[in-house]
Length: 110
Image 1 (cartoon, rainbow, N blue to C red):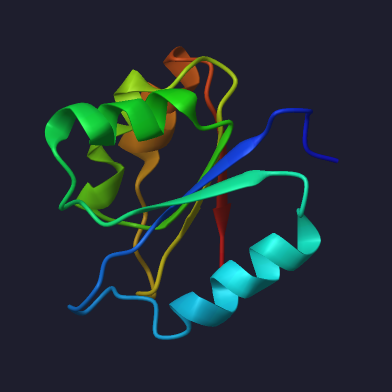
Image 2: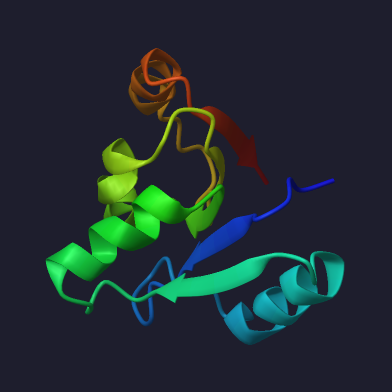
């Protein structure tokens, strides 16, 4: 159950090889499952200050693997992160280690 005042940040990669082809359906599913949460979408085209505010205010971040997660280091300790890989056989243990040192809850799903 998400905490009161939860803010879910979803990263939209737009085009490219790691884009989420069913991004709209994913957003609908998140909103249906967590109607009590505020939902924000990060496109990477926002001004830097706005991007940092999105990451800082998020209680949960959902994103495909990639550079779109670069601002995660501004997130608050305890922020949940669900990163999913759209490529087979990719491992990112160095990122897991860095996030653990920041007390960020990191989930890596299929």
